[in-house]
Length: 326
Ligand code: XMP
Image (cartoon, rainbow, N blue to C red; front, side):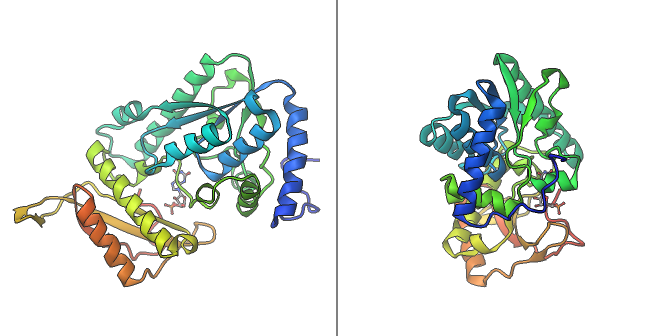
């Protein structure tokens, strides 16, 4: 039987009971596969890698080494949450690498979106490989591959491509959720006790805010984007839209317009709000965000975020527009 094919007999995991049964079975299988070996896992804080980490912690405890690479393009508070949940609450063996300067230095002056993505992907593998080199006796590589990754590609997680790690490491892959669909991964994550903010996290591209800080990334514009994005998330949380809208974020282009603040000219960037609904990200429609919510977000961003002097709402469905701006 092909291990990468979901058997017809496999019941969709929709309840805590089914999730608990899955967890118990996986723990036994992980123990059998790993024995007393060591497992390395790139922990981004996304749902898939977080669930894999939590499963591995249950199965092999400190034999798991998690590496969280902060590429400086995370949303506000995300790296802190990874440390809080995995190191402090779950007692994981976690190596935290703040590689912000490395990534931002490499990206300085680069405006081509494809080159930006390539630089981020390559640098991620570089940083992760350096960590792997420092550790000894690692035999296994944990991966948050899920079933759509297998169906849609060659089985390698497209973002952060840890599967692109140099072959010389010869790691044996550990992929406990590879036959699960996203909704099932979330049910399992909840049963494992992960916080809702992690389990129900909206999709976030591997290159992170890098594809939303349009054109050549600068630290000041990236900081403005991160703050504006945090305000959008906070306000969507408060009014219940966070549970309803599939993906919502801010993009900040690399041009300024004239404004006025405290009686003086105030040149600033626009913050563009995008809030979309979709089933499969192939097409997307626009969420009709209530006007008072938009007004509140606009007022907060203009008052609280240094460097932003206009707030715009993107009304464009996919197609013709893509979900991300780059
Ligand atoms: P687009 O912009 O192509 O986005 O309509 C479709 C979905 O894919 C996400 N996306 C990415 N995810 N790495 C990722 O892991 C990427 O480079 C990337 N680019 C886009 C996007 O957020 C949306 O959900």
